[in-house]
Length: 71
Image 1 (tube, one colour):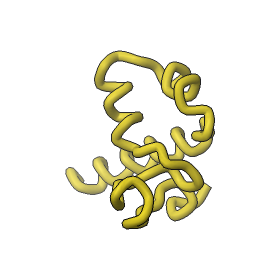
Image 2 (cartoon, rainbow, N blue to C red):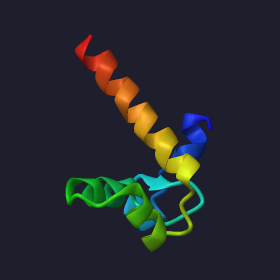
Image 3 (cartoon, rainbow, N blue to C red):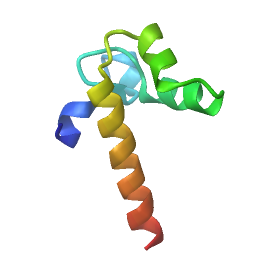
């Protein structure tokens, strides 16, 4: 899944917050779930408009950016 198809921003959708494409679910919500100790499955159960592929692609991109930033 290409990065551009995973996350989108639009001033008319959730005030321009980064959301999973095709949804109104902010990526920050996933991060909040994970920080609280919830699982990806818990997040997906609460936000069925987001696919597992989107979550994994987002996390892979975040991991790659972090590794690149510290390298």
